[in-house]
Image 1: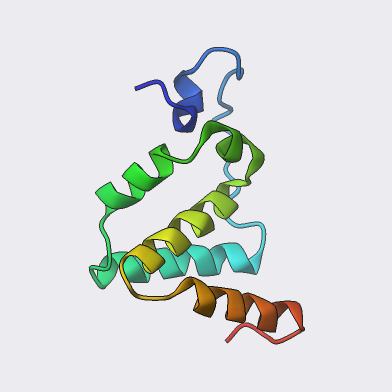
Image 2: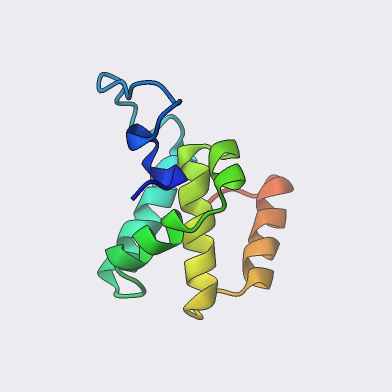
Length: 104
């Protein structure tokens, strides 16, 4: 496998620094991780599905997005596709947060 998601095995991106181990830089990243874990535990999707979705992010988008932004995008797509949320519900929640509404 030599896709964009496997940059550690691709030429031209330099070595992977094993010393870099930042897990969460912001609280929202923890929430993304939590939503993913709960979705997995509830059987909404499985780890193979997440891998498939991540491996199919277009290379340009993959390189432009932060690690947790990629995860959030993948989770949103999965929750919509599995019928858990609609795009309209996600957009409405984003508007509330932009307007200063807190995360609940």
